[in-house]
Amino acid sequence: MQCCTAPTTVHCAAILVYPQIQPRKICCFKPTLSQQRTSQDEKTKVITSPSNPFVKHCLKLRNNSSYRRSHGSALLVGSTPIREICRSQESLQDGSVLIDCLILPDKAEIPDGLDKSAASIVRVSSTVMGKLSGLQSIDSIDAIALMKIPSSFCNVDDDQKNCQKWFSSAHRILVLDGIQDPGNLGTLLRSAVAFRWDGVFLLPGCCDPFNEKALRASRGACFQLPVVSGSWNHLESLKEEFRMKLLAGHPKHEGLVKPVCWLSPSFCNSISDTPMCLVLGSEGSGLSEKSRQACELVSIAMAGEHESLNVSVAGGIFLYMLQPKNQ
Image 1 (cartoon, rainbow, N blue to C red):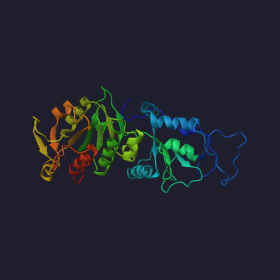
Image 2: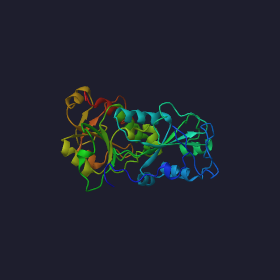
Image 3: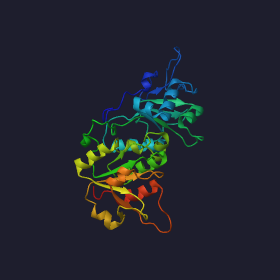
Image 4: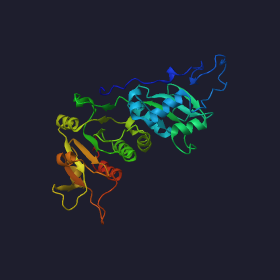
């Protein structure tokens, strides 16, 4: 797959018939030939069957990573993360439309701030809304968006080492090493956005950032910053290109041969102007051997007998302490 080029997307327009209502298009599926719309007050047909082709397509996007990649789309649940993404796009003055389709409960109003964000709108029953959301309770679910995977997501191959195109800035890059838990990965992505890091690099073994649980934990953060998936060879190319320092979070304990620095204000200030990658490993396996050998190890001082913190908690501390200054 070529970097920053989304694969072919299945658009709602390929399945839908659009009624001629202005200024907003309200779409429905499989209307009868006799169905004619003469005014905006007529009821829009609602998708009520989980067997509807569009519903099946959305469920595959939610559950299957390779299907998401092949169609270049993902399903995002909840108006709050959808709205955050729209605001982020507006702040970047990016004219591209990320929302292919906004899915709403029957008779529900369009959530504030989303009335002009989607290319089309689909109305569904509460049963279908629950099926698409994957949640037991849908009382708080007021919208689901069929989103285009952004061009800022890049899955690089072995021949693709033009790392200048991966990140618009590479002063602070979070590197995740085998983070398989989608909740932890999503939380780390959200923290990276909150503390103004420039992007995230996913080493092999990480879960898909567009996984439904990762999206829920990140609240769509992977739509708001560059995310690159690649190998250690690609990461080394990035390091060499931008002359970056490699740090890795690692608990300090007896028997560790390699020296470990403490994460402290003075340490963070000493490298505030240095381009840097921060590598975090999984809770179960920790850092890979390659990461331990290639990186300078840094540890968070803790009281008591605790050996380590949850990776998303520790990552939040690292990301806050090492966040870019005056960028």
